[in-house]
Image (cartoon, rainbow, N blue to C red; front, top):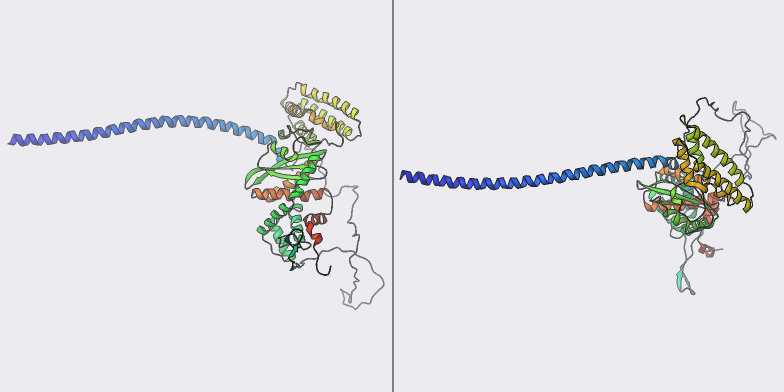
Length: 483
């Protein structure tokens, strides 16, 4: 019995060992599969890591290229106000009026609104009583009236029936626009403060409250500006059409921000109109959209590539070319080739400016065009050895005969300075406000700014012209009782 018990005991232990072995073997197989899976995943991660490294290198190269492009066009977007001093021995100019400068004084007003006689009852020093005299001198003083009260008008507008149209009609009171709680004078005041004086909304709101006791929140001012943009819509389209038809057009662009994102402000102008548009792109589609297909006239622009494929003659800006040439020629390590090229370009520009200002016949224009075309080809074909001269040569190669288009057409300028002056208004606004908060705000700013700056360009009375634009046509039939 003892042996039997021992046998049974050993048999149970053997079964338990087999069970443990099976359990451990299954666990080992599971760990082996997991190890192989992890090894495979590790290999995949290594391949992905190598792929990411390769993409990172490509992105880094692309970033370096974009940085070079940014530095190349930085002077065209944000121009510095500081000029590099090339000569330390330059004599410092004294501040204020220079010797021999003829002084000027303020002109007296052309009209007098009121006259007042002023005298003293007592001496201001010893308080002795004074008598009147027949002697006097005149002093003309101009002043404004502060803290004017707003005029609140309650209109009772008749609801009338038109038997011709078979509908109800009503009058629009004079000096108001439909559905606005504010009169035309307030609307004009806000427009002038925002787009002519370029004040921020906070300052406009504060001025209204301080000067007139009228509290209008910034959000309400924004709503007013959006409504005015809709009212100015037809006039904005007229400005675009006028620029398309005009024989001389200017174009320029500058950086903008919409909701913190990069965008572009485009400016198109003629001698009579200015149009701004704010877009998310700096591509060729924008000038094609504004100027249309095959517009007449000549476009004066800088050397930005988006204008090249427009179907009209183009005049490249000499001011940009001369400025870049001068900067390279005045550097300490400038080459002799670059200095000679700079002198050649300055002399060529001086001669071209003199020719463009003359009244030439078509034969003379074509003759001079061929002469200067050969001069430009000579510069392009010259084998320069120094890099600074090659850079300017490349710029001239890209512009080519666009530099002398003005010879073929009358009244076409050689520079795009007019566009630079017009877009400067938006640059100043961008520095003050930082851009626009939304696409709607950008569109409103572009339309309203176009209207105000066009009126300013024409040198007409801003107030009277705005009154004409804001006065509805139907008000000519609007009468008040007693009229």
